[in-house]
Each structure stands twice: as C-alpha cells, then as structure tokens.
Image (cartoon, rainbow, N blue to C red; front, side, top):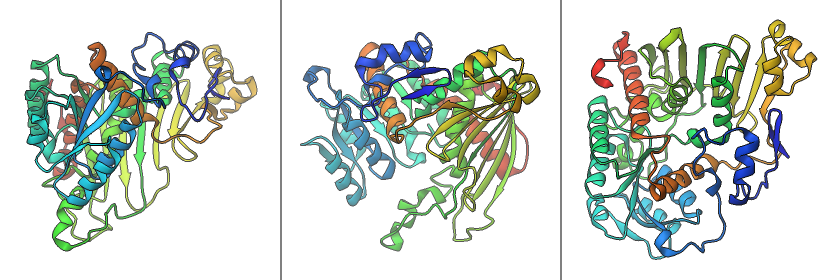
Length: 424
C-alpha cells in the first residue's frame, strides 16, 4: 500500500498506474479534472498489441546518454515504436539502434530523418545549442516534437521556436519537463494551490552532486563533443542542465514566470579547462513578493535534489534522499489548530503541535526511476492522439528557458536581470 497523505490507493509496484486503475487513481488522489495527469496511466503497458494505425512512430535525434534513456523508456510503451535514430558519433548511434524497435533505421544527418515518411514525431536530445534549428525544421517537416530541456540555447532562439510552434498548432510540441506528470509533484501542486500550507513566500531548490560532471573520453579530439556541457559554445551549464527542471516546477506551481533575478557562481574547484561554472546560485523575484532560490554544487551532494516551499501554515519538502518523496512540516503552534491542514494530512494533533514531518507520499515499493519520463511520453502520445496541448507546452518551455538564460546572464555579468516585455 502506498498513499498520498490521508488518501490511500493501491499500487502494483510492477505496473505503475495501469489503465485499469486510472479512474480509481484520479478519484482518490483528487486530481480528476485538474489537467495535471493526462496520459499518466499509460506507463508502463506490457502488451504490444496496439493496432499499427494507432502506433506513434518516433525518431530520436541525439542518442547519447539522455537520448538512449528516452529510447529505452519510450520503447517500453505499448503505443510507441522508436523507428529511427540519428547521431554523428557511431558508438552512440549503434547503442540507440540496439534499444529501438526491430528494423529501426539509423541516420547521421537529422534532416534525412525528418524526410522519412514513416516517422510521425521526433525527440530532440542533442546538445543544447542544436535544439532550436532542429525543432523548427521538424515542425516544418510536419513532425510532432518532444524537445528535451532546456528548450533552446538562448532567448532569441526560444522566441523563434515559440513563434514557429504557435504558427502550427496542429503539431504537438512538448518540452522535457517530466516532473509535470510526476504524481508526486501533481500532489504538491494541488496542496499548495488549494491553500493547505498557507501563503508561500519563499522557495529553495538545490541540485547538488559531488563529482566533476565529466564523461569518459576515448580520445582527446572527442572532448568537446562528449563533454559539451563543459563549454559555453554548446551549453548553459548547471543552470540549464539541472536547475531548469526546478525553475519549471516553480513556474508551474506559482502560475507565473519570474520578474527578475540575480546570482553568482564560478569555477572554484574543478579547474580542468571547463568553461561552465562548477557552482551556481540564483535568486528570482516572482509576483506577489515570492522569492525563489536555486543552487547547484559539484563539490558536495548534501540535499541532492530538493525543493522546499515555505508557507505560512506549513512547509512542503520534496527530496530524493530515500527515493523521491515529499513531506509536510506544519508550523508548530499554528498547526495544532489548523483544521484544513489536519484534513489534508490526516496527521495527529500531537504531530501537528510538534511540527513533525508528515509524509506527502510514502512508497513502500522501490520507486521506478523511469516513471516521470514514461509518463511524459505517454502524455505526448495522448496529446497527439486527442489533439491536446501538453502541460509542458512550448509556452512553458519558453518561460522556463528564458528564466534560465536570465539567471546565467545575471551570474556571468554580476547584475540584476529583469524579464523584458518582449519575452512575453
């Protein structure tokens, strides 16, 4: 048995959110009709008996670490076949094809993949600086697009991609912010937006690691190609590769983009020729006086992946210390007489008075780390099939991306950066 606080429902740990339990899940979790969970129930489906006409034929552009992870997850879904892979590095392409559907075709030029008549949609999982042109070309080629985050390399290209996607609403454009279809974060969204933890005025987000963030390079000439995240020509560094996910979560939960940002960072430990910072911290100002701090370290893994929402009644924390989990920390004195918080948490009066952590989600079975990405691809399929706008839409991708680029500008230039009117 696993539960949202006060709202238990059964999960078969070998088959997260099966179709037969979809209605029960939506009802007991209180998420029916919220628009937060479209497509959740499709991950994973074990039978591949879907009629061929209903199959989504997917091409993956960029079959490095993230691209091959996407192939393995998407190919496990009943309704998706990965029929094409593209990469300029032969070992990556070979690995991608080994994970794809039998008979999948390999390409070294993404434009040839886009010309293929047997590809309905593409995943763009290349280095960041390549996203924008590939996304625009894919839309022009009549393909639906799943673009990994961050959506684009800079603000100008984000505006260009958004303009192109807006001009073709018949093409589904989804950005890889998969936490929007993570049931844990759906519960956080609901709990905060129903006012159960009071007014949220401060948020902290960390994504800390202890390591150089490098990948092994078989020969020196491949350094920039394989470790592209280290070089500003190709990457937005830690803010784009890690914090961008959390920026999107905060934007989504607050229903707003930031107004301004300041920050700092540096190459202070890993002096190995990298150009992107090994630590970053940014503080954003949001409407209604909300402040949100985002930080990434590569020298200490304490806190790991963590988000904390500080409300006047309670704090919600999500972390991955013991598998991704969430907790409510009631404000000790106020919590004792807070009937709304008691109702949503199911907590005892003693726990509320003490401010003890109350689990927001308590999985007894090990968490399947494919779940958010699997849900995201299931949602992508559902949006294509039913003509829906994804919850991680091009608009969401643009807002999170612009905020990410603003943070990098603030950090690099040592100044406040404001959201400009022409970003809207």
